[in-house]
Length: 136
Image 1 (cartoon, rainbow, N blue to C red):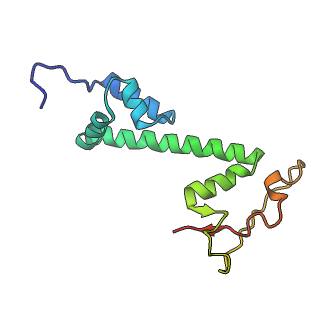
Image 2: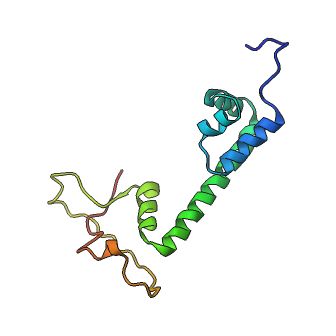
Image 3: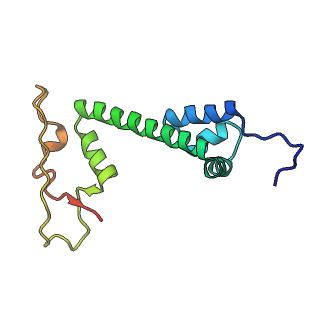
């Protein structure tokens, strides 16, 4: 426990700086270290202070929306980003484990708008998404 004479590291300025970094899609670790505390200290602040926890959760939500918007914007130019979000966010895979070749797998069809640039390179391969499966 901290001695009564020791000044707390938790200041409104430090908390706001951490929240700003989280909103900018930085990790908890990087946000904490850049502001002179450990990730464990940051975790403790979130657990012990409901108001800070709520603001922290809101900052994480802002960061998630910002990142997803960037992926969607990139996907409008190159559909591989939509495939990436399907894989990372929803657990889809384009391959199977060995020995699964005889199993019937669902086929995934991506309908992309015709934007005049032709078919994306990864769709030029035969049956590009026919081996996609949802992982559990």
